[in-house]
Length: 210
Image 1 (tube, rainbow, N blue to C red):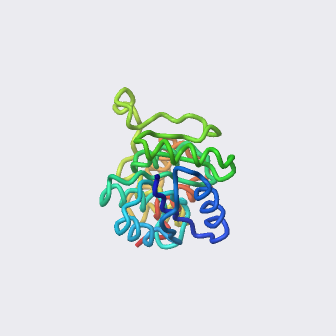
Image 2: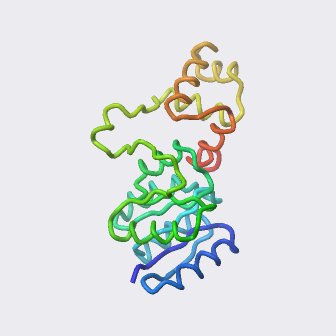
């Protein structure tokens, strides 16, 4: 029996997932959580086989929760559940240690496949996703772009709504340098415009976590 912990802040959605999972002969929901920190606490206490994790929850972002969980309890498989199909988010979750990535708009069978695959030690990506480069593939590791510390600083400030001039003043660099760092970071992460930057920031907890 696959023991599943559900982490989703919308009660109605959570109830629907519970009903779906509990109808299966080979899995059951052992607990629920309404935010990321609660999910971490219950995962540590109950040691489920799989954590189904919404990426956009109060208290702690899904990406931050996935990273923390893998650090504390690496034996628990994480299946990310989200409406975001951007390849940058998929790669970020794979880097954080997730075993599955499922879109909320997909058929329920996708989630069930992901749970079973993750519980068996495999990795499952929703069939509705464009296939990203796997950051864990040793053939790609050396060539996978990574943003620098400075590019991260700039992108965080952009997401928080600061202008290029304000960022230049805060970091004691020129406006032109800010523009270069921002452009490089967005290119590496596959982000297109401020909306993508803000979504990326939310998923990484930049606008929410302390």
